[in-house]
Image 1 (tube, one colour):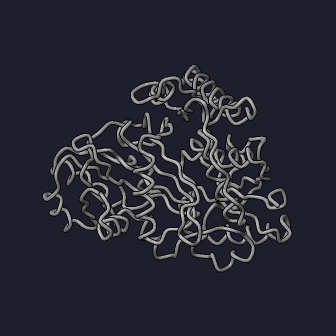
Image 2 (cartoon, one colour):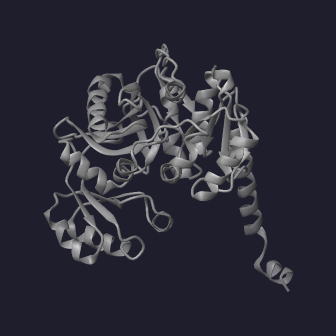
Image 3 (cartoon, one colour):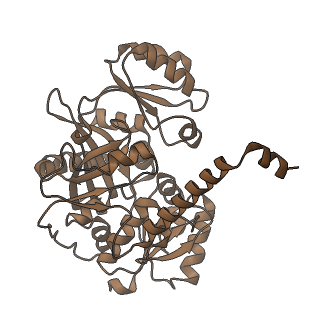
Length: 401
């Protein structure tokens, strides 16, 4: 049955490539869709590639409806989203897609609450989940509430926002109220929705995550618990390397399942935690709802193929039993930034288990082209910059006349 039902991964990038490779391990026919076919990850040999006009909005829905008729002949492929804006689109237009594709999302009000940091905060507090205090700032008048927080704090946008991302970092660690007020004042004209939350003390290796797939009955079909080894930038950045965390699996699966059950979450979801260095207790950081997590492939590499578990659940098939590797596998992603790459290319730092095998997010002997394409583009850009610098200004001026 599986050979007849394809999977569509919406969005290339590291996330989409990891999902496609995970499905290919289980011999699922997979299609990787993106609006930019030039991306390095779109050169994988493990998935067929299709263009779409966008990964969000009504144009994506129109393209999916067209592809259902022209490519997939009513087979109802399984959809995998890799981006939050894609999830919001699928949720908004789900009534147009459910007869054509298989995908599971929580009710729209639940999804919208959990994809906003303040909405998540409210639900976590309602259900008694362990989460640090937070203040939402939407206007200058809200800044006075920052005085009541215990410092340091983390300042970040209430939800993903393109203009914010072009001008500010993902998050900021701030040591006192005056600095927090100054930073938020600068952000508000760009994005009038900022959250300021008390900081959880701990290192990057104290950041854990629990990946899950939950069926329509609210049952946990599959779970994997991992932890970061490094983030970039440190403390407030994305995952640079991560590994399985069997030592915290039972506790975090129970905590995650309880929260998602109380909130009414179904489909793909995950929760990020940080172990508080002061108390040793886990505190919730943020959920990912309706899509694969950025580092989803680390689960597959450590024996728990989450995308395939989701695929099986969508088709009503038995979810396979995990097959654990002999040695832990570290998943790491490189960066084009030299300083970042130096940190990320050394994943055997604090918290890296002894005997671990390191696997790169792009490079595989069985699927080399994504990294080859990326390296060729880096070399071409470096050569262009070097050539541009070596040309005297007078020559460039003459050539422009």
